[in-house]
Image (tube, rainbow, N blue to C red; front, top):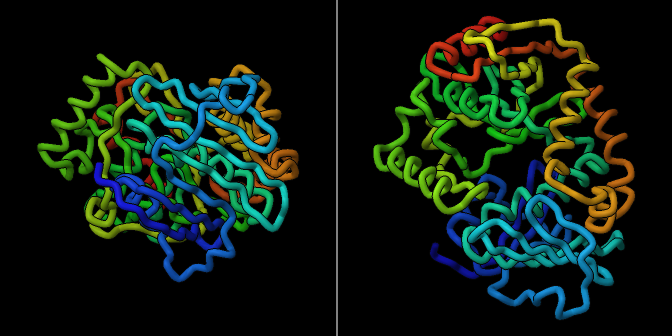
Length: 369
């Protein structure tokens, strides 16, 4: 990957701002391209990220101890910072996080990407901080769901990993003959006053999300399809659980400009796996049940592979009040978000083929349109 030294400012809907400086790869430049704001004020930043080339010291050389391990990473606590090193095979990135608790200075992340490390900067370092900040200060919530607008109405597709939300959203967002616009594929931004905010990033798709069940597959080039298969093969042979995705950078081109920045939330379709060989639907999921499921999904995102006290980890990483208040803020926010919104359940068979996709699409369009 070509690296260029730059300093960039990013503004996520005026609710979260951060700066990134250093030797960027092409991937990093494209990851946040939809939030680049050269006119934004550096002084308003909520987080500073510095990309370095092999300058972060090994933690044991500065007297750090090893009290924890989190999501495939090891973390050392020193006097006023945390050092992370990851244990994914071949993806040897490292980060030093300064958790300054003064309100006049944002936290700093020093990131050494190593090989294949760029994929982890957003999900493992930027978004965890962003999640707590938005819930505490912006009445906005980062939740595990895909999102789109249909005829201007906001639609959420929450689901646990591997159910099929990516496959559904990617194909429906490229369906001809319908006013469907893409908003997000993996995580959705939703405000307390029930607005979905577009949250596009580089699409990191795998072969199980790009099967020929709908129009999205036809938009992938022949070279892209070969690349996806080759990367899946490499994953199986060399990488174990560290998957190599195929990246789509230009979402405007992929979705023919059908990207939505904001839409009022009107419908939620909770996708579930079933052992049945057909799609079934239920329009009677209660708000309390949906809130419980959303909390479980977020808890799994944060702590699924951890073998330590997560409160201790994130209390150190983030200013303490944001962590202390997070689950209370989340419960309050989800109750406002799902108040008066239609909530449906769709059960998807393990074999998510063309017929299953058509049935899911037909049910969603019938309800919304």
